[in-house]
Length: 240
Ligand code: F6R
Figure 1 (cartoon, rainbow, N blue to C red):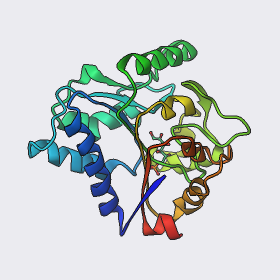
Figure 2: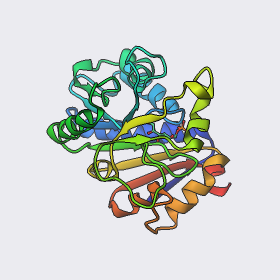
Figure 3: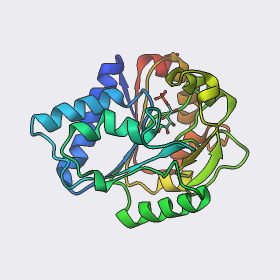
């Protein structure tokens, strides 16, 4: 794993945007694997600026998002589809028909996961997958467990993730208890991975990931299996 330690959140966002922009410049028809959550918002802002300045072009880009709550409608302002539209897609010259997010309102969620795994395979390996990390080490909605799923699947959210995500909802009771998420194998299928972390609350998870062991109690540690991972974190996440 390559490690980039930044002074603060703004530097994390700038460094991450630079890495994604480089991938886009090298291949204008690239596939971007994207994440939601608070961490990548600053990076998306910088990508929007670069797009407005003509530095990067989204017109031929395809995106595949990591996950989506279940059940949730794309119009719900807490859905990850809504988040992506608000934080990136509505502000850049991307063709939304080429932006993929798991279907949070599918009548058959298991079939929706199978279909999403096929979509990810059909668009081709992501040139870069952007990840955040949960306080408990989750990536996507792959929560700590004795065994981790390989492919896109339906999963229950842990109590700690429901609590962490309650800040985005009217109340904790409003947080959906399930999600559709890429599996660890789906994520590792990307050609390059960057994982962003800021703040002391992420220190334990970042330390476990950087310990270099495969530990299912920290799903992010599975990234040690990949040969091109860049960890971009601030000093608080690194030092605690
Ligand atoms: C989001 C996702 C999650 C978040 C993680 C960190 O698509 O898959 O794994 O990356 O929960 O969230 P924030 O950035 O809000 O701390």
